[in-house]
Length: 311
Image 1 (cartoon, rainbow, N blue to C red):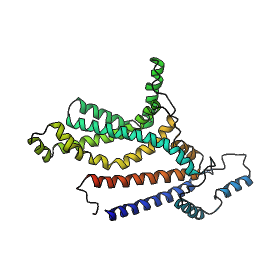
Image 2 (cartoon, rainbow, N blue to C red):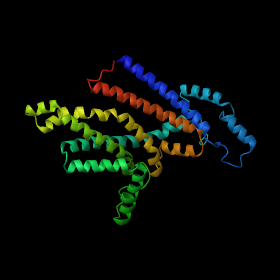
Image 3 (tube, rainbow, N blue to C red):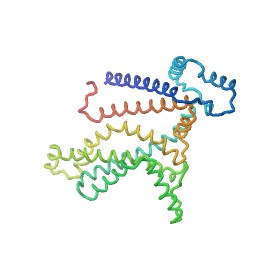
Image 4 (cartoon, helix red, strand yellow):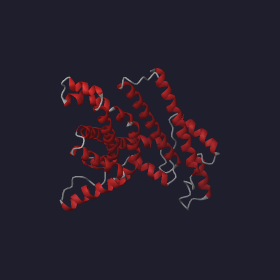
């Protein structure tokens, strides 16, 4: 077990190192200069600003300095906001995490439920309804779905029925979190429900399920005690990539619903070529997603006794 964890940690560190390096050099390959947006900046001021952020030095010197700062947990100063990047990340990520957790809970709970019911009621209305929801989630991008929800459930309900149930934009109250969490989580819900349905059908056709039926166990007991535990394993396996898709999806959703999360800063930093903010955000999210993948791998081994971590 310890050997497996050490090996996975080594892979995680290597992946993070490659991610930081690629992000750093790709930022320097972008056309333009973060200080040339203002045409009134003099040559002297431009030189002073480049010296302040270390952009006047050779790229390899900048890279070595940046890697050393990352090892100390220093992601640099934002060029646009003139603030510590880690401070911005720590403040705004809590909002993004709140939205992401709500979307994940919605996707996982409802997706598992829909998939299980669809498998048990195969060929019936529940199965068709579940697959219809999954088809919408896979086919409609989150930003399109978010705009549709704003129009029909917020704007039209207020205009036609005079019901102000869901605000169009903003963040704070529970009602303001419903539409963005639904728009963000529906795609993952579709993936979870389809995978759960397929896995559940395989489990229900297994020999040990037939043995449980021959012992006189009811369908509810078979599903709760035997089928769900084994059918949910593939769903747990994809939770790492699902977390990644949800967290990166918050960038677009936060812009649509005007949510003050980390995605707002990331989008603005790309537009303004804020190298340190872009790199800091990518490094932070990359480290977080690598950690999530590692936790899912270990959790899978603990839940399923057939998986031997030592191997």
